[in-house]
Image (cartoon, rainbow, N blue to C red):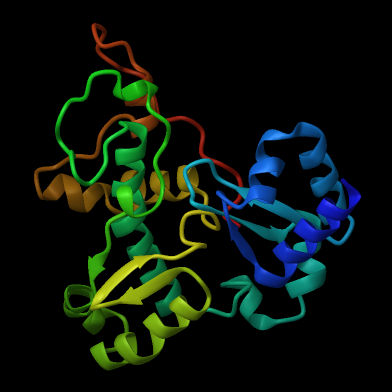
Length: 242
């Protein structure tokens, strides 16, 4: 087991992310003893395993106590420990909202792109799907037309900002489409981001357009009894983004 622990730890650090279907990753997710050893090994160097059951990849990130010693000396740390500018962070949040929010609703309701909107018998008992089956891309041209003027210009977004987000692993650019990258779903906390976007930034915009935000998120709605009307509050969001 020691060899596998060292190998997986080294691969995570060297490659930054690995697919969930990787045999060693799957072992870390289902073998409690193996996972404990991996967590201990990563923690010894200030790292932790980033694992989201709805994400197709796992990754490594810094533990909270290692953030300040690692990035505290740089001025950009207050905005992003990856050195992203405010415009790049705004674009990343837009892409996350356009790609991950719809994907998560499909995953929670156990629907895929082929049968979206259709009721399926025993859908709740199906395993959570990942990848292209539930994750749709967005048109690069449409995104640039809609947000380019607000984020420094269309040329800047196309030639610099999208390229940087792709190099960091947040998105993939393929055939004029922007697709989910390995880090887009695993590096950002869904509960925290969704609550801030839907019930914060977009609440007023949606209400003015005649589409007030829902009283509960997809997780709460999926867990409500079919015969009872759900009237609960939003769950507490997570405390960390990275």
